[in-house]
Structures are given as structure tokens and as C-alpha cells.
Image (cartoon, rainbow, N blue to C red; front, top):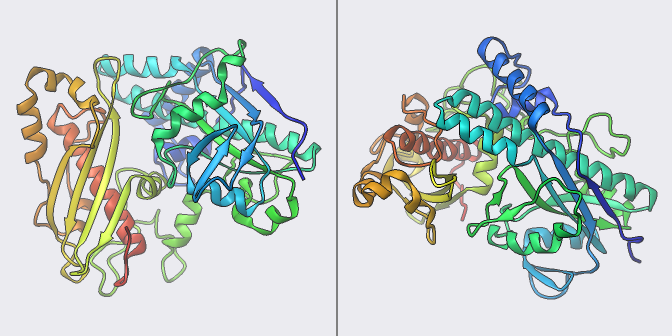
Length: 434
């Protein structure tokens, strides 16, 4: 049983309708929050700017072949092998016989303008436009999925949720191989391109490469709800919807619901429960949906035999000079056992193995030894319980580099808040992750 005929879809001038609720979510505001004042002004400005200057597009084509039996945890697409167990699992479960290769991009214009705003000392405008670019990418993925679903509905096929390099179980280093397979060069009508840097990051960065599984076993997908892409697709009024959209924030609220049925997220932080050293339902400096993604994709946790916790958090950013060269740093955080209040016993930050982008930071170029000494020496909240991060007043510079102390403090805050969120969400005496 095979999927046919082959499909190829393109939207060189894709209309984009960013839902207001999705934009607010990415900005980090709680569900139901109404923007006002300066925030409303900036949000409306970013939307207007992009409507005039943005060049969004998406492209999808069906791969000529798919093989799942070439090795443990591997997927072979048109003769190219990917080590991606998390991609293979749903394809095998749904008995997929083909995949669609998809590229979407908000265009280079958004990224270039955001960089200009940052260099002009306009961090607020920079932030709102950056986030709007992210919202555009989400809308484009939904639009591409709609196009695939329309084709699938007419051909008795089901579409699976998309997966991308950099998601859990699929190394971002394989991004370049997927870019080659998508083969954007075959379409001269696309207004831009997507390049893959040495780190696996994309340029323009507001872009995404993805694989959608295709299966003729429609009834099997309907039985296995985790294989229905609709739960992750926010496209409004879609006539192909098979299941209600379950926003990550709503799932988090269910996890963090108070014992009395109250909301654990929007009504203020709750005190730690009996025996718990962490505040549940806390207010963080970024939205819980963002922390959830970071906890899943950037954080690894291990509880050792002596009950101490070792966490590693990866931060990916860009330099503020040299055209925004990507860089990656790894944070090591060690905590005392849960019963000792998760006291922070060790902190360390250094460039991630293999990273070269940090050498292009302006302060590194001025005096590399001095900058790296500062990075290594900083150990905020050492000796304090992890819960202290909730009250830590720190620098909030959103610059992607590590040149300034306020920027480094900001990133330490993100690493510690992500760890706090992950442990508070899953806090239990038998917690064990690796």
C-alpha cells in the first residue's frame, strides 16, 4: 500500500495570519492577558512592520522513497540516512509509507531589521519584532500542514505531526542533510533561501526544516491520538481538523493545577507542598510554555546515587557583531539532595564542546583571557537553595552574546529558572532523568 501521487506545494508569497493569542503566548504573557500601553503599541508596530516588509514563504514536496528498516533508530529518505529514533518511532507506529519534506521561512528582512534595532539601542522594538518573527514561523508551519492535509484528504492519506533536527532524539547536526534533501533550488519562484551554518543553526534564523509523515492507515492514526498533528496545530477554522488543539500552556496548567482546582499559573506562586523545597506554579521571568520547551530540548537531568542532582543546560545565541555568528554555551549546575532543599553546590559555564562562535564576540576579540575568566568565575546563588532564583533581581539584557555582566546574569537566570521549572513540575523523591 503506497502513497500516491507525488505532491509538491509552494507558497512563494504566503499570506500570514498570526493569531493574537499565539503572539501573546510567545511574548510570555499569561493566557487571557490583554495587552495595553507600551506593550500594545510595540505589538501593533511589529505586526504593521512585518505586513509591509516581511517576505514569508513555505515549500513542501513528497520524498521519492522512505525506508525504516535500515538500522536501529534510523530513517532513510531518498537514500540519505538519518539517525533519528524520535522521528522513526511515530513513522513506524503509523506504518508511514512516505514523508513530506517542508521548509518555511519568515524571510531575512525580519532578522536584519531586528539586528539593526538592537545596534541602535532599541531592545524593546528588537524583542517584539523577534517574537513576531517566531510567531510567523509557527503560522507558516500551520499553513504548510493545512496544504498537506488538503492533499491528504483528497487522496485517502493521513498526515503525521512534523519533526525537525534539534528536537529530542534528532541531532541538530543533521540539519544540513535535510536541507539538501528539501532541494529548494528546484523552485526559482521562492523569494529566499535557507542556509545551514556549521552549528546546524539556520539562516535566516526565523526558518524551519521539517519532516511530515504520510500514511494510508488513516484508521490507525485516529486510534493513536499522539499521531494526530491537530493537537499541535493552531490553524483556526480548519475543515480537516480531527482533534482539538491542545496548547502546551493548557497542558501545563493541568499539570500545575492547585489541589482545590484553582489555577496554579496565573494566580501567583503557591508555597512549596509538604516536604517540597520548590515553589510550584511560580511566576518566572519567561512564559511557562517557553520553559517547557527549554526543559525538554535544552536541559538534561541526572539524580546520582547520593541523591545529588546534576543538570546541564545548553544556551544557543548569536554574537552582536560579525553578522550574528551563532554560539553555544553549556551550563553545569549541581544541587544538594531534595531533602536538603536543592541547595546549589556548584556552577560552571563554558563554551559548548566544538563551539567556535564565542571567539567572534567583541570582548573576546579585545581580551579573550579576561572575558573567559569572567565567564568561568561567576557563580550566582552558589550556596543558596534553588528556590532563591524566584526572588533574584538580576541583569535582564537580552543580548545573545556574553560580553557584558548583565547579559551573563540574564542567561544564568534562564538556566536556573529552566531547572527550577523542570524540578518543580516533576518534583518527587524518586525523580531520575538522564
